[in-house]
Amino acid sequence: MRGFGLLLAAIAAVPAMPANLAHAQTTIGDATAMGPTGSCDKLILGKQKLADSCSGKLLNMSYPDGRVGFYFILDDGRIVTFSGMDAPNPTPDTDDVKVDKVIMGVKGKPKDPEVVAATGTCTYGNPYKGESTVSCDGTMSNGQRFSARFTSDGKPPT
Figure 1 (cartoon, rainbow, N blue to C red):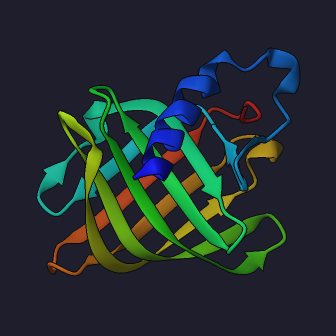
Figure 2 (figure 1 turned 135 degrees about the vertical axis):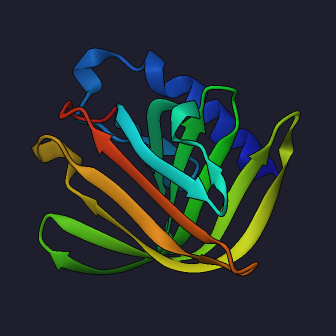
């Protein structure tokens, strides 16, 4: 769970980055992170509708092995992550991730998230070209659907 601790440290660092580094990505170990701001338009895990709990911050982590994670940060400190492997780009300014797990932070247990196998896709646009969307849809191994959508505010991520 050392990686989860690094993730929490990265999230804490995202809002503190200087404005002149807005086009930079942050390196954490071998991973690359960027944090767009905007609105969480949808966040559904089975029967749980969590969009009203979203903080308006998203963290996108890319790892050297091709794994990508989209971390939806909730107001109460929990994190919902859609994680999978990078897939071919449908267009030069969009990318797909084949989701293979959903990771849900458990309130009061930040180092003990619930990990559920899943199948689905996250599609996202280029956040450096204005407003963009991250959209994730699929099914968890327990048979429940997941769906998420985050729209950036058009400002370059930090």
